[in-house]
Length: 453
Image (cartoon, rainbow, N blue to C red; front, side, top):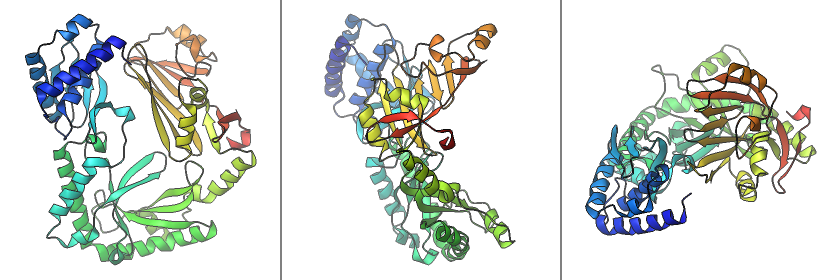
């Protein structure tokens, strides 16, 4: 991302900062010096500062900058001007904007990190901090018997990063669930200590509510089991967990439940399949209405068998296939990750802001997303180009033409434009999302028969 001179500047600046700041904290337990060093690198990349101007920053100016930046890291709606003119700001706790680019602190790693490449699950020092707060807050409460929540993941139309307590016998074996994004920060690892403490207090409220209602939870969970038992028997599945979250329940006494089945998941392999059994659904069943299971439980095995009969592990969209075949990414490593997880991210260095990408499973298909600050955002069948104006006649003429005739992109230039519309900040291209078949171990990609679309 940076030139040789920039790399040298970064090393020199980091050493100076470590010496000058002498272990000062960025606000979440990591070195302030490491965070300021990254902010200066980004400032230097965005601005046309010369090497001579870069090395001319005095020690006093660096210390003042670090103190101001630390305040910005830890206070929302604040900002600091970096030496070369870029604005570092915090609109909400847990996220830092540098020239509009989204960065975060990570309690487990020094420096600042692009939000695109940062883990979403609950882990590291912030999880340890959360556990300490919960243990302290429940020390004299009966609900301490629920124990401590652990990270859990289930993939539906998106990844759900969760925190689960152990199944509780007095609640009919039901699992108490909290969302890992409950800190208010964009990532669990980027939350500041005060946010983790507030999250712990909210979890303890859920624990107390669950404990108080555990007998009623058990009674209603029995109704859920009555509904799902025929599904698992008919489709040769099993129930992994019956789950309840207490934070977003309605005011009446009827609870909404989740069910995790073991079945064919979004990545077309044996895994967890999510279903929701709300109170309204249970009431419909009580009145004689038939409510079927999650379609992936019913049809997943059949879909997987069809894919296997063609030698495929799943489908892949045209954009995702173009990324893998471009030679610009480590396709072998990406496929290795997708064979065992639900998504993988990458960063592509460019002359300006870096391009971030993600490949992810959804509905048995590997999709792709691309994002470059102030330049583009490509999600599914929509490509938005910012700062671009296109006359109406040209928009019409581009229908049926490849994207490459309009934009110079590292991936997906051959994909066909279906239509274009004008946005306030640029244009939006509606493009095809043609599926192919893929075998993960070899990376082989080929035409997808229409019956497998």
